[in-house]
Length: 281
Image 1: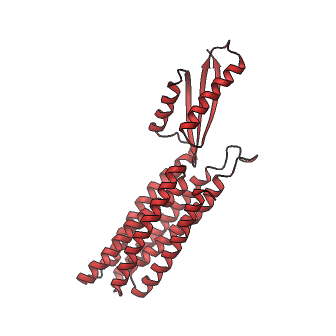
Image 2: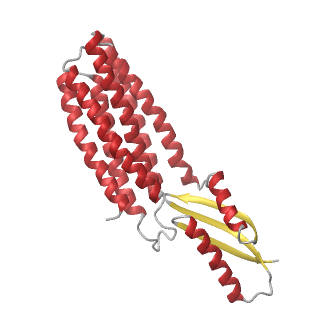
Image 3: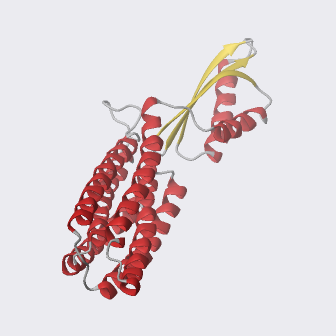
């Protein structure tokens, strides 16, 4: 089992544990902010399950039906995860609004605070693991999952501190207001995730920094090239360009030179596929 799959599985189990804890304490206390966090964690669980299966599928070798591989499944999973987060955030806002209207109080504030702060600590650790593996493997699915948990860290801390403030001040209206703030924060993060996951589905080019790095590698080879194109599919990167060479060179020499350039690029960019079209000067 590779690192991506192991880390994705860790996220699944941690989210499942936190859902159970938050739901139990949320029901006992009647706190909509805790229940909103349970819903948030449930969305994180769905996202973690999607990420788990997407990273397994994305590493499947190319086949007859998918000659360019299965990398874009990670981007599809990221889009689905973002949509789920939008839905969860809207539901939280609705439930919190109902709490404001009905003036419901909150019980077991101390227990709720402990659970929320514990949740923040667990998710901070898991999110760090996910980000580390995502950076090492270039996995958009794991990065999306890490982003979910990162928002959970901040929102859980906010709810935990908010419950402590309620215990000190007795201002129970803070509970639904905190839940709404949590939901708005989630919406902002979901928009960022949706934009990042959706762009590669349209074969958007790599970032300017990444393209510049590729150009520097090509320029170091003292070659003449044009029509450089790039795109990303999950953690896979594709680069195409036209290479100008002396038309009198033997085919074997041209092929050898292309291999040298391709090897250089692949040594510096992970999961890279290069397509070079050679043209005579």
